[in-house]
Image 1 (cartoon, each protein chain N blue to C red):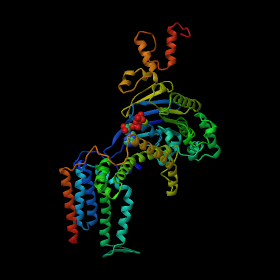
Image 2 (image 1 turned 90 degrees about the vertical axis):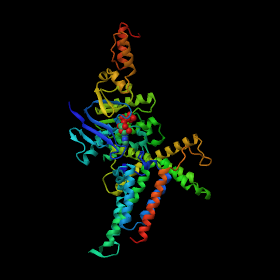
Image 3 (image 1 turned 60 degrees about the horizontal axis):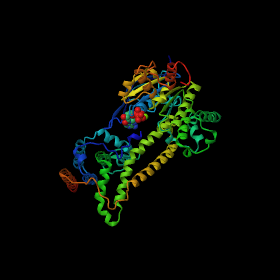
Length: 267
Length: 288
Ligand SMILES: Nc1ncnc2c1ncn2[C@@H]1O[C@H](COP(=O)(O)OP(=O)(O)OP(=O)(O)O)[C@@H](O)[C@H]1O
Ligand SMILES: [Mg+2]
């Protein structure tokens, strides 16, 4: 069940999307998210959807992997949709007890669910096609100007890359410890929510012990390679914008312009 | 012969639906008789750990069936949980999975989950501790203060305390010094003799397995390549080395001596066997 958490996972590949500069992908994702929140009508959603589907096709990521990423937040999507369904004013279609369903309600429920799902899938597409190292490299470069106002960009990026690197490891470790305890009759699957939470408690001790052990080992490993923070540090792999990146950024700009124009016409 | 555990056409694929999907084991047909002592060998990544996790229902087969005393263990949820008490599994490097405040409580975790009465739990904890050679004075210590070898013993005791009919150990000697290794294997042998339980042991060490088990099962690339007595297996040294495995050192010496024309058993696999042969050669005199 823990295997469903795919956050921060990278599916190696060599498609156009994989080869894009991480900065381009970060900016594109940001543009995509902004556009999602600007989009208000069928046409602009169709444009957004077309953009997403094209990107997925280009990336060759299996749609199944993307939908799997949606699973853990399905509950949030459903609750949001239901709230929108019942609490939006408009022409009443159905009425029962204190609830009413309006045409606008249906529309906003569908749009809301779509928006969240597309948001998640878009960001997953970013992590699926960008290795954690590239991702943090790109982020560090993009946020570079903030160093001027004394924000420790390099350290933050390093922390992020370590965190991303260790999420799968910790999940794996949790899985192993759960298996070992299941083998001794621990039961994580039945019982009410309190019983289940209680069964989880014994997981925390070995998990923390191993997390601290790993942190310690990592610190020693970094120090023995003379890591001393970001100052004066150069990169072996220099990021370089290529033609594909300019094409990508232009597409992003077009997408945003298109959606904003559509929105300003109230379409 | 009555089989206690049996698998039919067992297959397991990991990460189904992702680019990392891979077949770990394929079409495994395996049987273990009651009271048998079985060794499993195979190179790294051949699917040994994946396989044994099916025997107590920790992994669900992608295809195929696992039977315990003739019942399909995946028949319903209650059966699987029951099976876990009957088929005890000690993981690879189990010492990282200890979690209780004291050694005693950690060993008692399994019996407690079986909802046994307090005195019975106490009896089992002490008995299990004795089997793995943990002194009474260690029971009140924190498991995190113990040495690696001692932790390993605690973890094994935690499974033995459930008195499983089938005890499965994944590389119980890995990462220990030779003496620690030997003494853990001795403990397991003693447990096998004393309880008559079926024991299945995964290992990388030929020496370890040769002196211990009645039957060896060889895994290669996710399927069972050979199965037989140590003598049968070790007489196929060439096939073994093709799979990246070796025969015990004694066997290679015996084979070489045989090739040099000495009348010794070329597939002797314990030092005792070769010693007897050599002594016989010298005319039966002791201190040869
Ligand atoms: N949790 C997992 N997710 C994905 N693949 C896995 C997982 N566990 C094992 N595998 C893969 O399945 C195959 C069999 O692994 P397994 O751990 O069963 O081998 P093994 O024979 O126990 O090896 P070793 O002797 O190194 O312990 C390996 O190729 C491994 O990469
Ligand atoms: Mg293994």
